[in-house]
Image 1 (cartoon, rainbow, N blue to C red):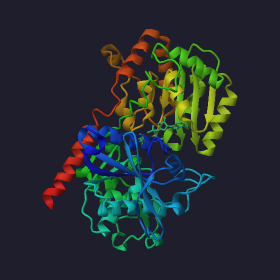
Image 2 (cartoon, protein in one colour):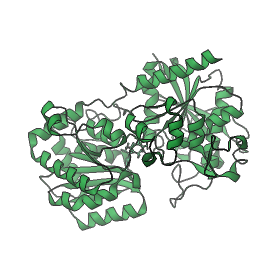
Image 3 (cartoon, rainbow, N blue to C red):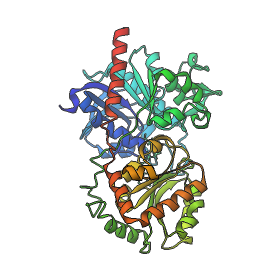
Image 4 (cartoon, rainbow, N blue to C red):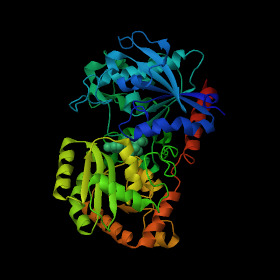
Length: 485
Ligand code: ADP
Ligand code: GLC
C-alpha cells in the first residue's frame, strides 16, 4: 500500500526531522507518517516555512494562496520526501529569518512567537475547512503548544473535525498577554478559566488541552505524572478534568535511521562486539585516554529538565571509580560553561562538545558503553532508546518514558536475563552517584555487561506496539464524530 492510500490526517507541528529539529519532537513527527501508513492512515504534515526548510526544497509546488493570514501574505507549498508528505506554510514575514525555530541569534524567544505559531494553527484550521485540491483531512493531529490554537480556530471557522493533541512536553505553555487576543484573531469569548485563559494570560497549550477532542502524551508513566502538581506544571487540574479523554502512548524511534547494522555515520557495524573499536574512535575524537572503565555518553539539550547539573555533582565519584564521559549538547549558557569547566578540570577523562551534531550523536551511541539520562522529568526520551538499540546501556532516572523503556539490572532481572539498563531515583545526586557506581561494577563484569547489552539491543524500540494505539485512537475519534453527526 502506498502511503497516500490511507485515510487523510493533517498533522501540525513546529519541527519535523530531518528538515528541522531541536529535539525529540522532530523525530516523532518525522516518524509517525511511516509508522501509521500500515494502519491505513495517510498523514500530511504542516510545517512552518523556516528559511532552512524552504532552502531544502527549492522546487516545492505552490498548492494554494492563504491570503490575509493574521493580516500577512502566505502561501501553501507541497513536497514529498520518502514517507513524508509536507505542507509548508510559506509566510516570509514570520519564518524567513536566521536562528532557531523559537530563538533569535541571542538565544531570546522571537518576540512574535505568538503570531508565528497562531498563524500556523490558523492555517491548519483553514486547510481543514477548505482542503487542498480535493484532499480533505478526516482528523487533525496537533503537536505541543505551537498547534494549540487549532481547536479554537476550527470552532471560530465553524469546522467540526476531531482533533488529537499530543503533549510532548508540558513545560512549554506558549503564553502571551491578554491584550494580544485581537492580534491573534482569537475571540475573547474563550478567555476564561474553562478556555485558554491561564492566570490572566493567554495559553496556547491550554487552548489545545481544553479544546482538542482527545489528548495524549508520549508515555504511560508521564500520562500518570501529569495528573499531579509535581509534574503538571500548573496544568495538572486541566489534565485531571480531561482524564476520560487522556492516554499515554509510548514513542517509538525510526529504526531505519537508527540502525546500527547499516548506519552510514558509524565505522564498526557489529555491535556489541564492535563496541570497543567504536569506543576507541570516540575516545580519540574527544581526546580521552584509553581506559578500562566504562565510557559514558550524554547527548542532550542542556536545560534544567535534563538533570545535567546533578551529573556534574556526581561526576567526581564516577571518575574516581574509573569512568569516563563524553558529552554533546547545547542550550543553557550556565550549563555550557559548567561543562566546559568540567572538561578542563578532568583532561583525558571528560570530553565536552558544545553544539548540535547529528552525525557525531550516531558515533556516540555506537561507541558509548552507557548513555546517561538523569532527567528531572522526561515525557518519553529518545536517547535512551537509541542507546538500547546501539548497545549503549541506559542509566536513567525513574521518571516518565525513561521508566517505561528501561529494565533495571537488579538481581531478579539479571537472574531472569531481562535487564537492559540501570534506573535511579530522579532529582537525587546520591542516587545518581550510586547508579554510576553500579555501572562501573557491572561493566567490570564483562560477561554480565555483554548480556545486558545484548538484551538492550533486542528490546523493541520501534513503532510496532504504539502505531496501532494511535491508529485505534484516530479511528475511534473519526467514527464517533461520524455517528454524532
Ligand atoms: P528532548 O526532545 O527533550 O530534547 P529526546 O530524548 O526526546 O529529548 O530527544 C532528543 C533528540 O535530540 C535525540 O534525537 C537526540 O539524539 C537529539 N539531540 C539532542 N541534543 C543533541 C545534540 N547536541 N546534537 C545532536 N543531537 C542531539
Ligand atoms: C519532548 C520531551 C521528550 C520526548 C520528545 C518527543 O521534547 O522532552 O521526552 O521524547 O518530546 O515526544
